[in-house]
Amino acid sequence: MANISETSFGNRLARAQELLDFIKTLGNYTPPNLALGQEKFSALLRQVDETNKKVVSVADLLNQARATRLTLYYGKEGLIKRCAMVRDFVGALPGGKTSSAYLSIQKENQKMNSYKKPTKKEESSGDSETPAKRIVSTAEAGFGALLQSTKHILEIIKNLPDYAPSNARITLEGLGKLISDVEAANQLVNTNLYAYSDAVAKRLELYEGEQGLRLCFQGIKAFIAGNYGKTSAEFKAVSKIKY
Image (cartoon, rainbow, N blue to C red):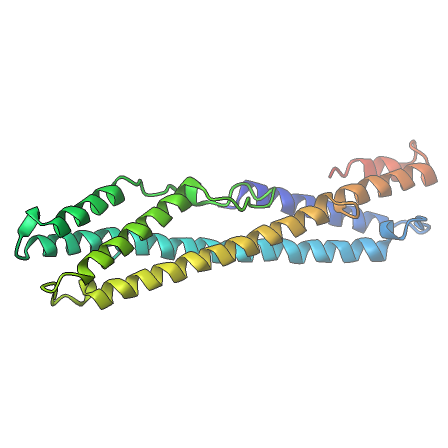
């Protein structure tokens, strides 16, 4: 299902194209402001169309990056499951569940389980009518805390001479590799978030800026009102095309 704001942007562009098609039918349409002319206005619409597609494209990349990251944290092979396996293995070592290593790892596991899996809303960039805010959300803070706990657990098991599991997923190397993968996934999310925010900001300028669609709409209608009169068929036709 199309995003509501994306549909809104698309509808406004469609109406702008309708306005352009109309002024092309006017034989003596020669506004004093070149930005309101057919050529400049047509170029603006092409730029808007390209930018709309860019926003959708980078939004898809951002969603994919977030989905990958979510799996690395909360999936069957993710950080939380993997750290629980490490805890259980340490509990089977000499000293068992009363050892300081086990108790420390268990404490980290409890902290990890206290963080709720982010909802789709928490993971989203927000309404694409405005640029994504580059702030640390509750979800981002939770991801950071989970990764920090995993790193702490890795440091604990590095000091356990008997820690030698046969399962490659919870060896020192296996856990270290997962941490590296998670850090890369976090970076990819940030990179795509910045790209998304920039694309949204550029689009907003094309729609609402000083040379944007809204003011072009107003300027074109003002010129037609002045040139043809507000009682003219030309103005009545163009006044029906709403931004």
